[in-house]
Length: 208
Image (cartoon, rainbow, N blue to C red; front, top):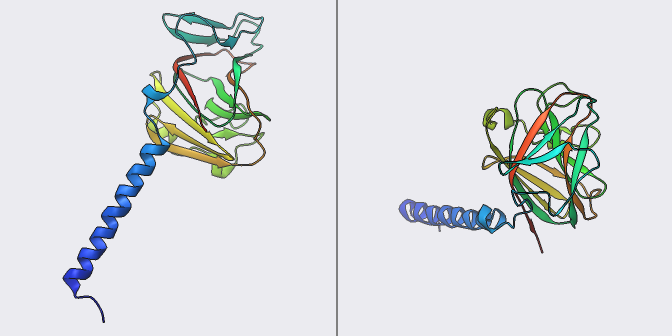
């Protein structure tokens, strides 16, 4: 026998509320507070990182600054520690045409910051794997990015799934079993162009 309409609506409303509460709990579990993520940059020097021979990376007033030299050779800066399943978060600031990124896992998986040298357009928060897979592109990033200001990026690498938030909003996700082995976290200065990129409040939480 069908439920009376008021009772049916009450049951439906209860189910919707329960689902919303469950989703809220899930989001809270998946997206821990920034303050719970251990710092990997102390704001004073490159302790915990492996500086390259060239002097592309400097710490200025609590900010990690990466800048190409006159020869535009580019550079990579890696953590001393390797990470597998991890939440990586930090703020990045840049202006104009730059090509940078966060590097994770082995083989190396890149999350783009700035303009793609191949596509000639800003692909911030999209994954680069030799190409930019359609499903791994952050198509909303342009609406959320604050040019010339600090932007907070969070990456969750869990198993074969990589999820990205920009300024608190989910913008991209990529799934592939290829990028499985732990590796140091990397920051990039791309060769071939004059560019400057700044990072601060870099944090990483290893996931069980």
